[in-house]
Amino acid sequence: MSKEDYIKAQRMGKRDYQLRMMKGLPPTLEVLDDILPPKGSYSEVPLGLVQIPMDLIVGTKTGGRSSAFAGNFMPILKDNTEFAIKWALLSTAHVTEGIREPVKAYEYMNKFYILEGNKRVSVMKYYDAVSIPGEVIRIIPPRTKEKENRIYFEFLDFYEVSKVNYIWFSNTGSFGKLLTVMKKKPDEVWTEEERLLFSSVYSRFLGEYTARGGKELSITPGDAFLSFVTLYGYQAVCDKTMSELKNLVAKSWEEFTLLQSGKEIDLKLAPTEEKKTLLSRILPMSSTKLKAAFIYAKTPGTSAWTYAHELGRLHLEQTFPDEVSTVVYENVTLTNIEVCMESAIKSGCNLVFTTSPAFAQASLKAAIAYPDVRILNCSLNTSHRYIRTYYARMHEAKFLMGAIAGAMAENNRLLYLEDYPIYGSVANINAFALGAKMINPRVKVYLEWTSRKRFDLYELIRNLRPDCISGKDMVIPEEATRSFGIYRQEGDYTQSLAMPLWHWGRFYELLIRTIMDGTWKSDDKAPGKKAINYWWGMSAGVIDVICSKNIPNETKRLVDLLKQSIISGQFDVFSGVLSSQDGIVQDDPERSLTPDEIIKMDWLAENVIGSIPKTEELKEQAKPVTFQQGVKKEKGQI
Image (cartoon, rainbow, N blue to C red):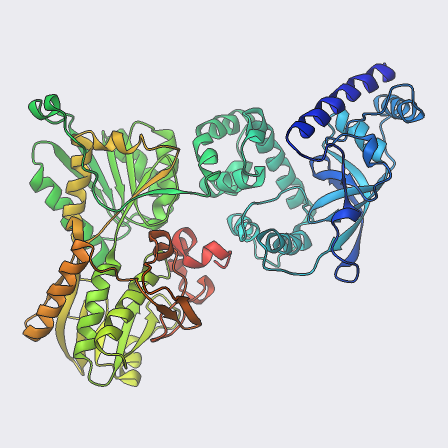
């Protein structure tokens, strides 16, 4: 049988050899000596005896044995050679008693190259072994700015605490995100029990993922696993039965395929105008009754953000009294969001709006469980195929607010208060700073975060003495104060100047009309599988600025002129030469930042005094939002 096994393995090798030749790839094993950086530029670290994942063994240390194997480590020499006889004997030994002698290998960039034991590896790969013991020497290259190099050094930190070498990611920050999902600190060493549990759950996931064709996707299994445990929770996945795990992997498959496009988002910058056929003009709009649930993290009486959405909900009921009914869930937390969503859906809601970015994961889980329910989450740059997200280009209004503040400033000091360092908020800050600088080149914008630990607004105002303050966007019903929008503060006296307007009623009305006129379905027919995000601005009437009587008429005229320029597309807030605190961001006077560059903005304009905080600098209640939407999470700094 051992010779027959060799012949079978040889056929597999020749087939792989020919396929690689047809694709223009090297047909035999990689040789580590051929790809190492110059001697003296790298270091060697003995790892001792470790289990080497078979999938990560890709070649040999030297070129001597490379030509005896195809690129998949299957033999290609004739079956009457001494090499074939030894291979066959090893095959027999593996079947009868198992191969126990460790190989000797080098690890470079988390790939393994065999120094001694190539035939043992070949036999073990033939029998689909998961791993093989080996004495390993790690080769650590010099640090560079290349993506793969940065991922590798993140892996080294991860390996130091976990001793796990079989998971890999396509993006920087992923090892840190995995530790966060597992609720482990970056420097917390894993116990043996924790390593065994992780190995078990990852192996079970990998089995189901591979069985469904995971190897055909361009992402790594680690990418899919991280997405999976982020969605369902690491401990919850550990507790799943094989049947439950199989079912969840199947339901989540479209999420895995979406990861291949780098979380590419189909950004809708304006409401889609569906061209009507003559028949559709004659027939009435869809008569399907919509029951919409609005899920709030706070109450309209205690939160300006929630109050703005509540006004939008009321507008919706007034606009569609016969077509739309609504229900409200208030003070929803991460501990009961899933219960609230299930309650809403089981009560007949076929449309659900979750109005906090922190609810994105729960929204996705509900969308996978109830595919016939339309679920939308109010967040920016959230990439999930099963749900849609929506937000507004508030930076357009903030630019106008900055222009007003710059015109009203006498001592060139403005204070800008922001809640969370999340997608969209940094663009708002910079737009405000640019607007202020356009009117007053000497003005400085002092940035403070209300969610930062030990934040004291009154002390801040007393020490800074700013001319104008940009605070929360609108009034809270239960707070009798004028401290919103941009205002002046002199002792206990507050003078209102202007406020930005989130017209969520208009936003929700337009979204409902896309469902009624069939545009919702046509949006889904775009080429490729992309997540859909509605990101509308002033041109759609969902964002505006309201000036008070305390603003001079000349300033109001300027604001109206800028507003019309933005609406018509003649002026772009982030166009021309742009400078940050660290230098030039864009030096082309004819270019404008792309929507993606605006959304993912992680720099501050040169006239901003302040910084973007990390999550550990913020209060506890900020963590759910920054974990989901924090601008630092792109770099694994959450």
